[in-house]
Length: 204
Image 1 (cartoon, rainbow, N blue to C red):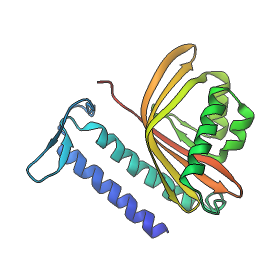
Image 2 (cartoon, rainbow, N blue to C red):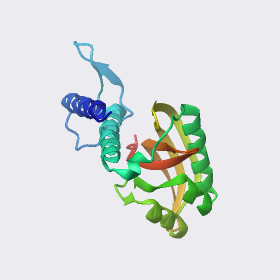
Image 3 (spheres, rainbow, N blue to C red):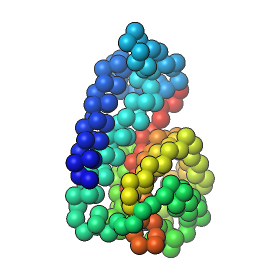
């Protein structure tokens, strides 16, 4: 299993390198609104780097996160059984509902003790700090997702998609438009939210 994920991580890293080769220098701010182009060799690329570049970066990041979870010992070993795509999406819906309604008891049940939550701002939260952040400064008014893909690997499921979250932080309203990976682990009869990685989609 570890060898498989090493291969996946290497593949994702190679994809990022290839995408970087095709993306022109623009200060690291790809414009996802530009039309895709195809070069003579049949490789499709975005004229300014594109949303695909962000997705590839996320794929490489999530591979590293899963590999770290697998090597971290007892916490990762708590994952057991088999998880389905439907179960993962229902659990994600329950998390969205809990966060939008400030149901901290439900968050405590849904979040794994080993949660690593990487915001699109690069701020990293644990289970305790993420719940505390929502108690004190951050409120999700609405959480929507689209372009969702679920991959299940035994007791782990990875949800990938686009998120549009209406939030209030420190009294200021805003909307986050992101690409994300959400990882769920099956632990006994329940699912737990164990990892989140988000990348902000640049405005067109």
